[in-house]
Amino acid sequence: MRDTDLREAADLIDRAGRIVIFTGAGVSAESGIPTFRDALSGLWEQFDPRRLATPEAFGDDPALVWGWYEWRRAAVQQVEPNAGHRALAVIEQRAPECVVVTQNVDDLHERAGSKEPIHLHGSLFAPRCSACGRPATVANGAPAVEGRVPPPPCDHCGAPIRPGVVWFGEALPADAFEAAVAAAANCDLLITVGTSAVVFPAAEIPQVTARMGGAMIQVNPEPTPLDAVARVNLHGPAAEVLPALAAV
Ligand code: OAD
Image 1 (cartoon, protein in one colour):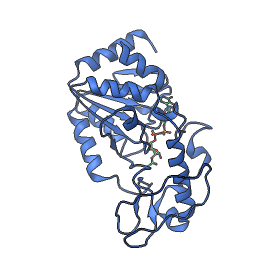
Image 2 (cartoon, rainbow, N blue to C red):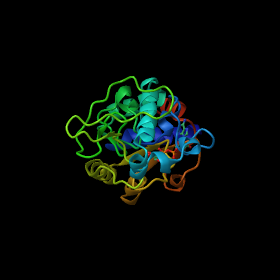
Image 3 (cartoon, rainbow, N blue to C red):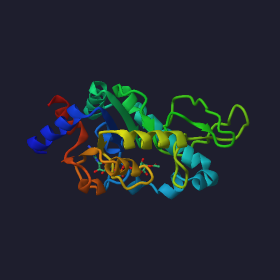
Image 4 (tube, rainbow, N blue to C red):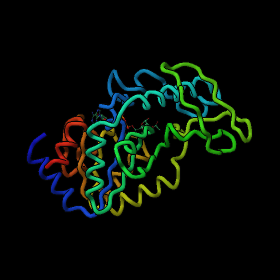
């Protein structure tokens, strides 16, 4: 990461009236939460998304799917936000207007101090009934290893409770997606952090800003399709780059 790039990025932040922060799994990597597509360590390297992250998978084997998400929920509860999440909350607090849009289903932005991030792919902490859709409360004490756990029944209708996340083949929550598109279209600057930017429609969000003439800063140790679109590319891990950026 070059000093000139860092200064240019800090200058864009200082001058922006409206900022969107758009994050993916990479922002939580240094908290100990695996990403999806990183070689060797990525979740989709080790687990088959078709067996775990589709409505059909839940229909075929609810205990396998519920147990996997309960394991992920427990893993998130055992870790802390990292310096990258905290620096983003600082940038958010300093900005005249700022909206955090995340693809992550963890709660690390909230715990670092971000205000009401938009969760495009839902949350591990918002289970709901698979039939009637009512929100459900699930006890803590989730398993420390992945394995089958039968989902509890809905208090209202008795159908199995499902994770409150967006699966492959499902639509994004309409209110969240619309709010994210509106924020991306109207911002001066979008800061994208730790996303491969290949999963649509979420990956459309930074493209909306680019099309509307907004500036973009990208933080990622690896190249992505956004390299060509971003005004400044800060190559490095979020927990190192973002505190340096917030301190300029
Ligand atoms: P990916 O796993 O596709 O990409 C993670 C990105 O984070 C990669 O570009 C890495 O280079 C980068 N990265 C890794 N370590 C980093 C670090 N320390 N600091 C900054 N960046 C780092 O994750 P997402 O882009 O979030 O959806 O994936 C998008 C969606 O695909 C997820 O929300 C999930 C998944 O399937 C659903 O489950 C619906």
